[in-house]
Picture 1 (cartoon, one colour):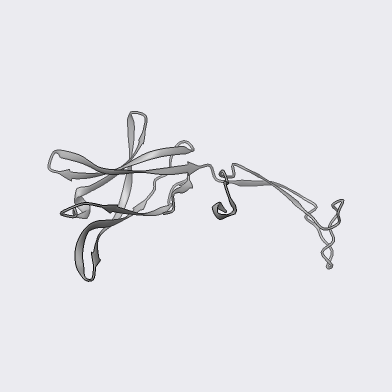
Picture 2 (cartoon, one colour; picture 1 turned 60 degrees about the horizontal axis):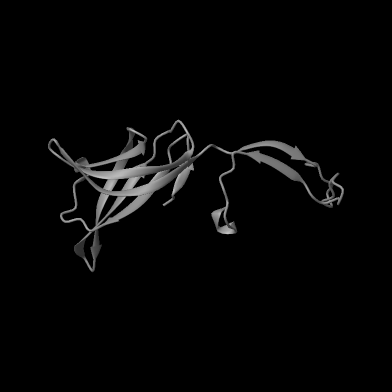
Length: 141
């Protein structure tokens, strides 16, 4: 989480991956974003073996910094283990890049001390935002 971020990059993402024994060291983990036939490298900040009751389990938490990306959309990210010249895909997850929303127009932005605006109903304002990510429910905001 989170599962999305701006095309400007810099979103720090935490991913839990299960079923790995042994847990690879940070230098043996590579994460890439797949876009058609090209791959973009993701900065792996940390690989933490998870424990249950103080005992290591076959689960790890990765902390990633998502790079800037050329286009918005949903992309597959691959977590790979690198051992010498060999690379194995451990697992994949989806990440959605969105264009940074832009507020472009505020209508009836002036209000009186009582909260009255110049709108027809006297109390509302309107803000136009472009490139706002899709929203399926209030929980997405």
